[in-house]
Structures are given as structure tokens and as C-alpha cells.
Image 1 (cartoon, rainbow, N blue to C red):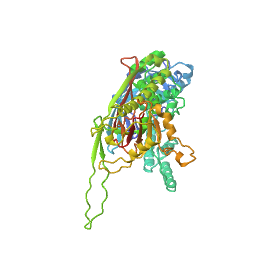
Image 2 (tube, one colour; image 1 turned 90 degrees about the vertical axis):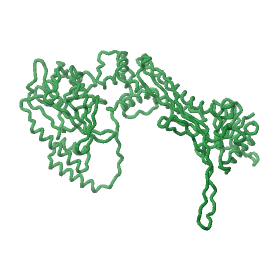
Image 3 (cartoon, rainbow, N blue to C red; image 1 turned 90 degrees about the horizontal axis):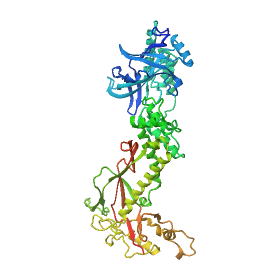
Image 4 (cartoon, rainbow, N blue to C red; image 1 turned 135 degrees about the vertical axis):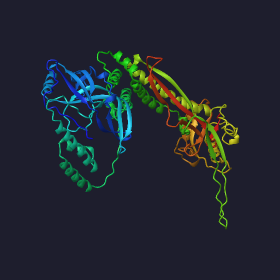
Length: 601
């Protein structure tokens, strides 16, 4: 059944010129097509589920504008539901700038009404054709507006993020001679035009243009047919279809606000389009905005009262600050990661159970097929190493005082310190594993330490970095054999040293213009130097293979939780916002053949 709307063409019978009041109908239950991540759906408002408490004494606005008090035309005095209609008695202001609008309403020139509302509870269903229907079974109108005449009863108008605007402009300021039948016919024509355009495979903009110029059904058919002919002569093109997000989603709005705050911490950050409208807001301004979109008035509230009410009324403000801290933390975390991670392989773990890494030996040698065509079976040896992911974290607080003071320095300091601390924790965990057992490393599954003569990856005696010792390290790696005794061809990639050996290592890896062959440095441009500040021994150094080519040191995060994760909530123990940093992290050596150690001298 097509939606209908009503136009006011005569002086409203319910208008009281002395009291400056008029009774109007602002809804009969609206239905409109919308789009979300799951595709198109029909939004329906159930009048039996409307909560009218906040509409009493709510503002009467000019076209849903809440940018300033100048847009307030009056207020709502009475509201109710009667005979399937939501009605209200509104009183107009006596301000001089409102007088022309009041006179136009009295004359029947202005007669379209709309309502801004928020939805607390949805109910999903399907119609006979399978179309998804989302019914607002609990919703709250927060303002009524006078709006311009809309030719399309199916058009959807929204005034702001998180606030829905009634898609049917429901003028129905009661009139003595309202031309309802003609408008109803126009609504039916509009509905048929939409059907024609949809069957022709044209977009909504095409039908909107026809409806705006009040085309007839025959005109619509002719225009749609012509558009189809023009389309058939064009080359076929592919087009990327994307589903966007809107400020109706509280999470989307909070992320945009959080990004805006982060841009004040990092002016080099290029703001996304959704975040630009919040770019110059202080923290208290954002607190005011979170209350406004919830329909909570902040008139006559001080900055401290606004922040306090935002913290106690909605979780949005905690989400905004959590997003800000998370962005800054991530940047600091990525910039301060230790060098040892470069020699390790990153992976993920599905859960917190012990992770077993099975090692397969080298593949069996291919053998010539015998005369009867029978192939011989081969076997691959197996071994396994294990480690597990654990959860680490801390909770820190951002005080109400810092928020009121708009103390961005405190946020920058907190988030940077958290990012550095998270990166340092992960690197230190890797280092502690490497230098455990007095430098011999962790005990492997075979009961032997990582670096051991049995594993042929430990220098017989400690020596400084030099051509001969680097050659010995390279040779030891290249001669490593697999579980079945075959060569596995391990190529050295990194030279890892403590800061005490940095200069010595640089000299041994430097490229020089040699005058004769004996002066050539064979390790120039062959190894990548990694200086790890957290290594405790001033003499021990390591040579390791590329972790992308062969297993060795490995670290893992819980699936979908790579790096430190941020959660936030309004403070309970503290008066402000609490930020929790959580890191699901674990590491272990899953192979000894790719690492070589020299205790040094």
C-alpha cells in the first residue's frame, strides 16, 4: 500500500490566534526503504511502541535544525495517540523572526510536519516476497519540525547522526477543505513510478527526478524506455558497489569523534571526511555532542556538568577517548618495536591452548620406477615444539579533571607510554626466551638446550666477530641436516648483536674498495645487522636465517587480536574514563637449525 501524505491548503480550524497554538498530526506510522550492511530493508514505525514522555515540552523546530536556539519556533504543549494518528498541540514563539512563519501557518501556506526520533528496540521480520522489514517497536520522538513541501511521500529526510527523521512529511494541520483525495492519487502515481523505474533497472535518482517534476505514469514509462534504449548502446562497464556507514551507527560516530581528537594530538594525521565536522571541538564540546544526539538538553549546564552528565549517561564518551588512545598507542607501538622481532616469524593462535608446531623432515629422495611400474613408498620424519599464548594487560584512568581541562598533553603522554610499553614488553619476552638458561636458550622438545653442540649451532669456543668466526657461523648453518639426515640448505640472513658490539659488527659488514683480492670483505652486503638493546651479554652474538624461509623463533597473537587491544568504560573506581590495554601474546623456538650462537670473548 503506497504511503500517503496530506497538504494544508486552508486555515487550520484548530488554530488559536490569541494563544498562538495549533493542533497538528505528526505521524500515522511511517514506512520507508533504507539500506544497511545486510542490504535494503523497509523501516516501519509502530505507533503502539512510541514513548511520548520526552516530546512533551520538546522544541518545535525549523526543518530539524538544532544548530542554534534561533531555529526554535516554539514548543510542544500536549501530545497523544488517537485513531491511529500521533497528534500534538504546539505553541509558537512571540519572537519577531517567528512571526512570518506563524502567519504562513495560520494562512495554510506552511503545513508540512515531520518528527525527529531515536529507536530503542527493533523487530525484524519478512514480508510475503521475502523483503526484510525492520519495525521500530520502541522509539522516542524528541522534536517536531515544520518542513518544506515534499512531493515524494517515500522520501527519507534525516537531520543529524543517530537521529531519524520521519520519512513521511505528515502535514495534516487539520483543515476544513483539505484536498486529501488528490494528494492520495499523487501518492499512488509516485508509487507506480517507482515500480516502473525499478523494473527498468534504473536507480532511485531517476524516479526522484520524475516525482519531483510531478510526471504522469505515461511520462514515466516513456522516460524509462528512452533511458533503457540509451543504456543499451553504451559499452558495458564494471562498477564497484560499496555499502557505507552513517552517523546513525553510534560506533561509527564515536570512531569519527575519536579520530578528530587524535588529529589534535598528531597534526600530521589526514582526517577522514566523517571526522572533519568534529575537528575543532574540545573534549567538553564532544561531551555536549554525545548528549545532544541522545536527545539530552545541555542548556544552562556548565562545562563540568556537561562532562559529568556525559560520563554518567552514555558510554559514548568513553568509546571516543578509547578510540583516541588506541590510535596514538598503535602509532607509538609500531614505531618502537625491537629489532629482534625482525628475526622472528609472526603467526596467530586460535585459542589459549598449548600450540604445537610439527616439524616435517626433508622429503624422501625420488627413486627410479621399476619395470612393472610400481612406485616405492617413502616416509618423512616428524618432531614437534610447543608454546602458548597468554593474556597480559593493565588498566589506567583518565580523570574527569583532565577531560574538563581539555588536557590533550595527558592523553598524548598516556597513549604514547602505553604503546612503547606494549612494544617493549613483547620484545623483552622474546629476548628473555633467547637468553634463558644462561644464554643457552630454552630447552627444546629433544631435551637439549636451543644452543648446544649436539644441535651443531654453538661455537666451540667464544670469539669476537671476524671473518673467520662469521665464516664458521655460516658454514654451521649451511651444513645443518633435517630430521632424516639430509641437507636443508639454511642460508644466513641476520647478524644479531648487543649495542656493545655494534661498531665491531659494522666494520665486519662494511663494503670497501679493495686493492687486491685478499682485502675483499666477503660479508659486505651479505648479512643484515640487527642491534638489540635488551640483550644482556656484552659479548654473545648470533647469526640466523630468514624466518620467512625456515622456522626458528616464532611469536603469536590470538586470532583477530594482533598487538595491544584497547577497551574503555566510564570510570567506577575513578571519576573519569578507564582504559584497559590487553595483549594476547606468546612466543617460542620451534626450530633450532636456523639459529647459531657464539658466546664471544
